[in-house]
Image (cartoon, rainbow, N blue to C red):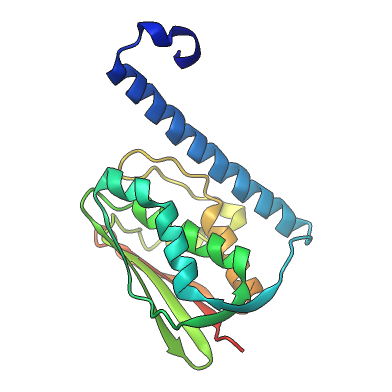
Length: 201
């Protein structure tokens, strides 16, 4: 419609179609990126180059990328990670983990909700949490979230579509970097995804 009928469309219709196109392209890009990572994991050819990284800077980079989604839903996204927090991990994998968890939190948090990213040091590891005030998850479903064999996906609070691949990829990437991931959630009361990474060496 935009390419063939734009002269006959009102500014409001152009804005509406453009937004729909943008949303669909973002979903498609996310699907392709996750499928590529999944296929590389299955073939055991994914690169893994761990090094000392500033967690605060990596998280802020992801927050900047999700600014549009935050604005559209009027969500408060706050990072409580200390600027001196260092971890030992692969940079691309760390960004993928954080991005998937933050995007997921935004997806399942209603308008004017809150998402908080925090970290604490524990026994040679840094524990990172992404907590939201979203719709939460039924206890029986949480075990399916990290399993490639039981892909589980539901629409977000604004109808956002997902692939079901993001959380299984998070688990693979966290474990490949020597950490663990878990979820604490209650239906109607939000979710808290927690993962660990080794402290910087």
